[in-house]
Amino acid sequence: MSRLPKPPEGSWTEHYPELGTAPVSYEDSISPEFYELEREAIFRRAWLNVGRVEQLPRKGSYFTKEVRVARTSVVVVRDGGGGVRAFFNVCRHRGNKLVWDEFPGEETSGFCRQFTCKYHGWRYGLDGALNFVQQEGEFFDLDKEDFGLVPVHCEVWAGFIFVNLAREPEQSLHDFLGPMVTALDGYPFDKMTERFYYRAEVGANWKLYMDAFQEFYHAPVLHAKQTPAKFSTAAQQSGFEAPHYQLDGPHRLVSTSGIVAWELASDMRKPMEDITRSGLFGPWDGPELGEMPPGLNPAGCDPWGLDSFQLWPNFVILIWSGGWYLTYQYWPTSYNTHTFEGNLYFVPARNARERVAHEMAAVTFKEYGLQDGNTLEATQMSLESRAVTHFPLNDQEILCRHLHKVAADWVEDYKKNHTEV
Image (cartoon, rainbow, N blue to C red):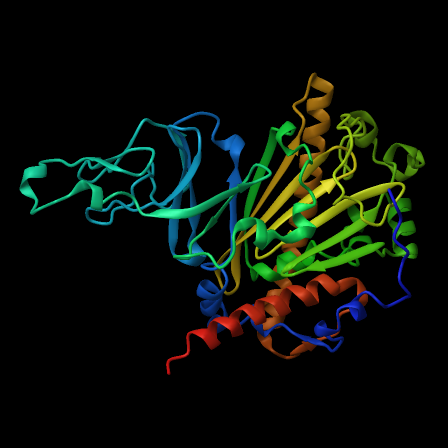
């Protein structure tokens, strides 16, 4: 794999002059008015990842996704022909939520041959067609063909299921993702079906948490207590700078060099890492996955560590050199709260040792996520004081600068196109 020459110091941001280098305002993260604009300008226009095809293993499999920022719920289903469809989760009779269990605000999943409304028993096929109406003769000129479920635009890329809530998407999913993301075509996502999932309600704006995982400048300081003292000291002394940052439309990428965990001195590893042969960098004994797609490790690092693809608006795919990957999602619930979801994916364990190694990696990442979340709630509180309104970002924080600019650009574009004449 060819190496990319590292640009001169401080030049990453300068490669994208439209970003500028001035201090950045975080008003977009503390303004209720800006959040209300984001609902329509961003989350009803962009393609949103809602899951993976493995969640729909057979015909009739379904799951729901609550997209509270867009004030809607979506049901995603494997139809009778084996395709993936999505519908607004609304019965066409009186507007009751169609698919839910005991609590209508909670997500659910399962298998069915048709969807039946809990309120009056209207039934819909897996293709969304209205199949049955209780006491149909009581209605006035009712044509069932006119009252099927309302479809949501749904497309699949590399096994990831995306929906677009707009009446007509501005781009196809492939065009929206662009060449930097679709250069991952061929990565064996489909082989990594062992999943660990966690979620948290975070008292901070969704963009602030995205910022936390798109720069590593904080890692040697914030996460120092997660590693042995000798390793933490060495990390803080050396600092961190990734060898490659890249922007493509609204999406971002940071690629890093790696550490061979088992080659570290024993006093720079935790005893539990030696026992489980796993930790922050994932299982030490990764699977053989064959040739990787051209979109990975663009800097040609040896050893390579990870690539973090930040897909606009709220989805992250983080691929590790050890043969596993994770995803992050940030679902806004208000201007200063959001739901964070994390998924870790592995090739299914073949024995108890491999399973324990996977669990060790999952627990480690959860602890790091808790540290980030705790800090971000403190950030939110301080920003809302407005005692300081602009903040300097260094060259390693180029992705943070880009995220906030894209949010502002989408909101401005929406306002321009929806101004009453």
